[in-house]
Image (cartoon, rainbow, N blue to C red; front, side, top):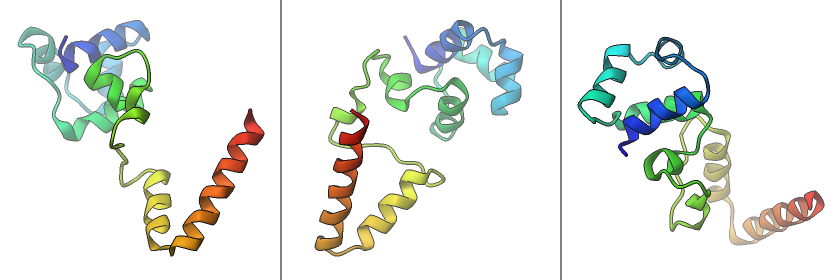
Length: 114
């Protein structure tokens, strides 16, 4: 299944019409039709808005995997406009001691949730 076909499947599963999806993402309905008919994929610059609209992880959109295996990859995708990006930028400014303290806080906070 192509990414485009997966997008169309997800819109259907969420009870969203192609018109609603088009309005929320700014992607023309004709483009959605080409994803299905010509088995094309969305351009990379559209993935963020698609994932946000459909509330899916980019890894799922690309792979179709039901499990969130993206945390097991050697890399993660972080969008510049996301809070995680800001955290990463600030983390990289820190010296090793500060980084270790921050990681300690994160681990402690996660333990409290369990």
